Structures are given as C-alpha cells and as structure tokens.
Image (tube, rainbow, N blue to C red; front, top):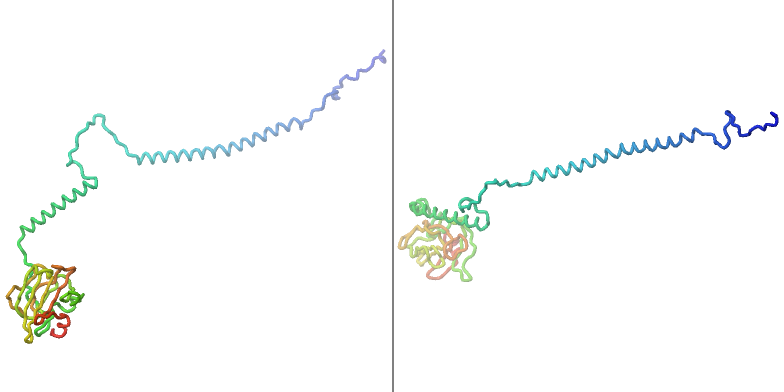
Length: 273
C-alpha cells in the first residue's frame, strides 16, 4: 500500500528551491540603491557649488543698487518748507542781479559812479603843469646854427616829402623832447593848427636865407614857447605827441627856405652840427 502511494513531485524540499521561483540575486537588489546614492551625491555637489555662486552674484547686484541709491540720495537736493510759511513780496534791494541784462545794468551804474567820482576829484584838485622845470633846461646836443629837432637814436623816419606830404614824419615815443632846429622868432604856437594839431613855427635867418621850420602833432600842454618869443638853436620847445590828423606818436617836421619846400632830413644831414 505504501508502494501504491505515488510520491508527490511538487512536495517542497526545504533544501531545494521551489519550482517556478527564480533564485534571488543580491547584486540585483544592490545596484538600484547605488545609483540612487550616486544621483543624490551629484545633486548635493551641484547644490553646494551653484547656490553660493548664485547668492554671491545676487548679493553683488544688490550692493551696487544700494550704493547707487545712496549716491543719488547724497547728491539730491531737497527743499523743506515749514508748514507755517507765508508768502511775502521781495524788495529789489534784497537780492542780487542774476540775469545778463541786470548784471550789465549794474556794471554800467558802477562805472558811471566811478567816472563821476573821478571827475569830482579832478575838479577839486589843483592844476598841475605838464611842463617840468627840467624840460626847460634841455638843449639839443651839438653846435652851430642848425640842430636835430629830436635826440639822436630816439626816432626813425617813416616817410618824408612826396605824394602830397610836405614834411618828414619822425616816429618817436610820446613825450620825447623837441628842440628848435634853428634859432629865431616864434611865428606860430597854438594847440590847434589845422591837421597839424599842436604846432609851432619858427622863422630864422641862416646864411642870409629865410628859413622856416614847422613842428606838428605835439602833445597838448607841452608848448614851451609863445608867439613873438626869440629862441636859440637847440632850445626845448615841446614834446612829441599824436594830435591833429595823426595816426601814431611822431613829429611832423617841415623846412622851407625862401618860401620853397625842401626835404628836411637831407637838410639836417648837411647843416646840423
């Protein structure tokens, strides 16, 4: 009877694996866990690197923005008005001129006041002679009946007789002393003689010939001789100026012999001692 009992094939032996079940492999279960761990580590590393950089970048922009705001706040101008402030009219004398027109007007007023003060001072001052005693003692160097009307080396000749010009223009600084080129009698001594301005004419007799010498454009107030006065050769008679029809300080010097006009520089070179 025991032999008739057929052994059951599917009886499970505790030492043998059951049919239809695959044996468990320990590597299969460990591999997913390792992958998860690796992703977790990579994520942590990325976070550790990216987050501080982002925070630093974000903080820099914020600092710059704050700094620009502070700079703007420092440069800004503000107006604080009291709550009880009231409007009041401004008098003209309480503020300074600010527009170009007002500035120009103010300057003109100040200049007018200065001119008026100077005029008042001049009117109250005592008149002072423009002719010094030292000038009266000057004489032209040299000897003889003819002298140079200006000190040698103090002038140059810009033009002479010709083209409607009747004399020599001897250019010299204003105030240079002028001497009588020849002794004689003063025929003319005036502050205005046509285009000659301040002018002196002296009539002389040299070698039996009538010689007239003319001195034009002299400085006003420097005439040292008067009409009818007898002067000596080389005597001081005035100073170089720019009066009359003149375009710069110089002496206009003319020479007439027996009524005829001659070239004065050549005459001086031949006759002046």
